[in-house]
Length: 247
Image 1 (tube, rainbow, N blue to C red):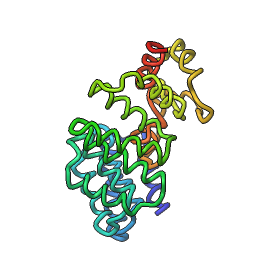
Image 2 (image 1 turned 90 degrees about the vertical axis):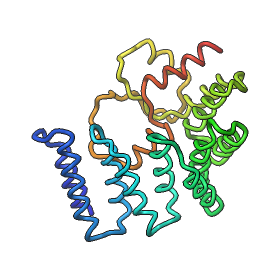
Image 3 (image 1 turned 135 degrees about the vertical axis):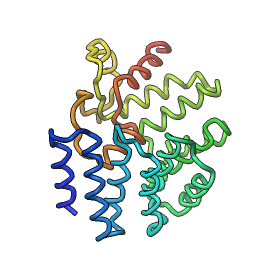
Image 4 (image 1 turned 135 degrees about the horizontal axis):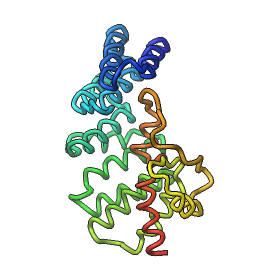
């Protein structure tokens, strides 16, 4: 498998291919490797994430690859969370997927994974059922309070439904203090200075937003897209607005 990953990395650093060609060639390599090793979960996940890369963004194909994992490993929590996130982002979370997440929640013992399952279930109820959505988000925080995503989603829920608006600042503060990395696209030194007092002890630094991050990586995807430990300056500025407006 290491050889496969190294081959794809070589493609991604090539200056002779455009982004679409890199994704196409990477997918072809993964297709061949998975014919030889059809239950290699790491390769299926890489293939699913590769399908989401710009400019391809083929979420249907990505969902198909993740469902292949669930075909031989139906209780793979991270695969279910990825499927839920992709479906929620590009369509809306389907009821049958939500039901599968609820069933898996009864089996999962790991508190971090239980936290993410609660978060994913909450996506289904966001606009449909305020009390149930709030319940799952609060459970997500109780199981693992270290993910900014929990506070951001709860903040968004309260704003969307115009409820508990007095808690918005506290939620923004909790989100910011758990951020690990902020990607900087707008070199706004004033923003950097203003947000620093709110950042927590686990903050690792500001990173140029246009910095190459190589081939898709599951941990980075989870940290950026789902847990929101890594975020952009535009999102962080949104938190800062709530902190300054209600501070």
